[in-house]
Amino acid sequence: KRLLAAGSGDIYQICKVFRDDEQGKNHSPEFSLLEWYRSGFDHHQLMTEMEELFNQLMQYHGGNQVRNAAVKTSYRQAFLHTLGFDPLTASVADIKHMTWQHNIETPVNMEDDKDGWLDWLMVAAIAPAFAGDRLTFVYDYPVSQAALARASDTDPRVAHRFEMYFGELELANGFHELTDAKEQRKRFIQDNQQRLAKGLPAMPVDEDFLSALAHGLPACAGVALGLDRLLMVLLEKNRIDEVLCFAVE
Image (cartoon, rainbow, N blue to C red; front, side):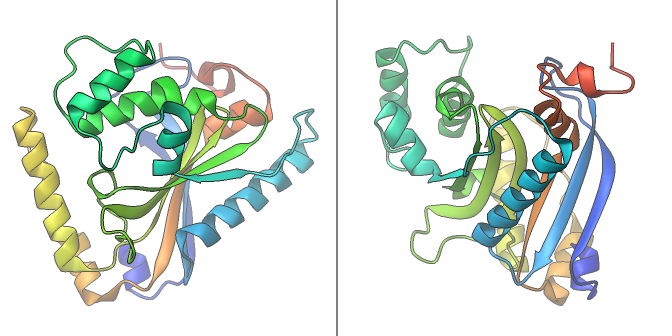
């Protein structure tokens, strides 16, 4: 983004990412990421480009998967369709009740953190309901879950973040990028306040990034696509270890 602010124009990188996170069939502490930004794009235009890229890769690979048109749904619509409640208006008590009604198993010691509950339901109930033979794009997440995305002009409760899934496997996370430095600083402060409330350490504020925003980030959309998970889909593999050169033990 600092290069974008410096006038680079459309830009991409392929890099290694390291995260101290859970390890499982879809997770590895080390993975590869394709990240790119498109000047003048919004999140819907970038979703269209991603679908085109995915279809080209499927055609090049020559696999047996059916290439059906992608499904696009808002975050709110996904919850209403699958679980019958509005995630933008429901209280934590409402969400707990809906979880019980749908017999959804939840981790022990879940706190009264609304976004934590919604994140769990996305993994446990929403994504598993997606069609298994095509891409699904979920867009316009709650602002509290989209610190780097610009807020909607028509509904300030949501921001223009999206995620791309194949079946229930999350492949990518993208944004219609927030370009307001003052608003971005406010989001960083709010995120740290939430971390502190959960007993987590505050993250350092990236002043270089905020300076770049203040200098002027052009209107753009950006996305990060997990290449290892993409390979899992193209090669019809069930575990990320099967597409890594050296799996982490």
